[in-house]
Length: 219
Image 1: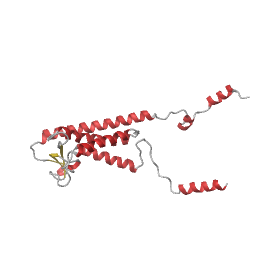
Image 2: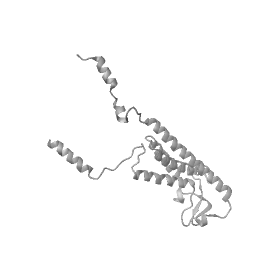
Image 3: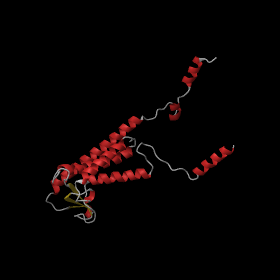
């Protein structure tokens, strides 16, 4: 006859499947907490990038208006105030109205990415992209000549005071590019936004797996 008390005792003494999977009594990090931390880092990075962009634009307007370009680092960098109707690095300057729509799409894409976000590097990458997009969107909305067609304030030129070597840009552009480059590096190294990491299979693993399957079929 089955002893119910003995069965309960045995069941209570046995480690649960979760305990066996995570180790002896140790608890795995809660997915909800990991997501909250990652989203917080994303938002903090975006706000810092956005505020830094607004601050540098304000300083540029105060210090560089009606002034010749300022030469720095032996001519490697020039501070040159300009207003850009195009996208990052002065691209597509004849289609100003398109860029707020693109920014809205970028914000929606980042929101979708954040649903499964657990990775801090990915949070920083997306935060930089979001902060840069918001920095230039702020100019589009609030600067002349009008709402959604405002011109973006740029001030950094490389190797030439008038952007003839490299287009004049601002901190928002730098944040955008840095975020995209970081995202590409994360993809190339197999780091996923949910915190996992893809690893390439060892050479010959597929052959070994097929050999084991054939041996099982023959036995």
